[in-house]
Image 1 (cartoon, rainbow, N blue to C red):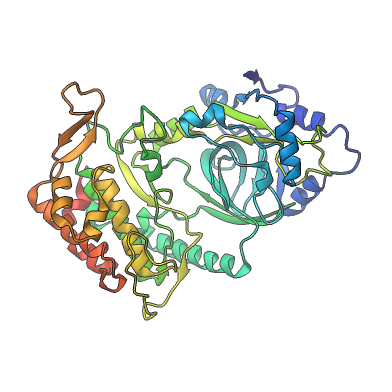
Image 2 (tube, one colour):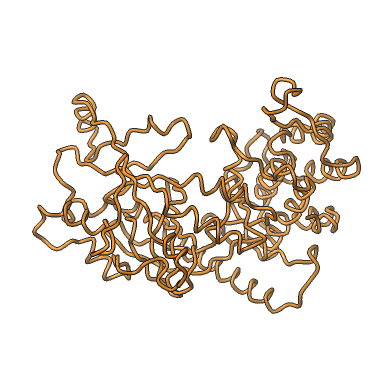
Length: 485
């Protein structure tokens, strides 16, 4: 692994690499022309800490760029890739499989797909300008980046949708964002309330900024949100052998009841506004910091300071050229998985932050719900009943740290589920008395378990017409659950 230090004269090693990679090109870069036209620019002179005066922040603003020396592909691999119609080498993942860290395929950067992004790129939004400093995650239809808000002087998250989004879908999403913005403004004008009376909009990831960027792969909707969150997916024990739980040992386990209360309140805001979320899953159920000062410290320590990159290489061996390779980035950046882990470890006051409204749409409550009898999946179409089923499923994960089985409720096996909640099996490899690595803890009293079985049972019905509405769900939850700290 070679560590490259930023060039102090030019401001960034990105400039040096850009010149080297494009030396063989004699024509103007279509990418840069598109960027200038759409409000995206490369400006290495702007530092993430230009507005911060402290020496400590200034040091944190200089990211270290790590390049992993990948093994060269074999002749057989190159021949196979060429035969399949590929233009670029397929990244080798073997060295990262132990930690389940992957990068996207360069072939995903095509017209109507992902937008090419390089570290140091600056996106100009409607409220501020944002410099790319790290990568948070990626999926088939979007990529999430950590950015430095140049105007506000803080880290934020930037999600860039793929270019295959239909105009009608984008218009629908913008209407959802407008609804959230109005609700957030209304909540901000309310008088201070007790914890259990906080409006549900507080638990939705309302975008800070929304704008479009046009590049070589099409027009992409960009959403700026809070970067300092971690997802329910990051709790998956398969990702890290030293994975941290949702709550630390010194924290009140009944905080999980509050998190369930908050998540249900968030969904209630959407459903009462005539909106189906459509994508309640481990990636969209996220948790923010109750103490923003701590969140900023963790972000400054992690983001942009330990970056792993893999160079994009053409199969014909030629250097990347702006004229021929405008659709791909110069390098693939691996997501910063340690950031999510540290976010979880240091978060002593987690707050629900339901995010990602890319599948959300307005839907009449009078629209008939399709009957559904095949477990465990909910209807393929987006409905309120599907939201309720998924909500119950992931509330179960929050409540039991994956120790309870939601299938038992869906099958009417309430007694099994009750036993799981009454004595939760927790993976504890450091406990010498644990049987096969598990220890058993009691987190909830008998009354709480009875309420949970009733509520989750109404959410997990296989027949979608029998599932409880979100108002009925929230009504069944004791208001004091919203006060646990």
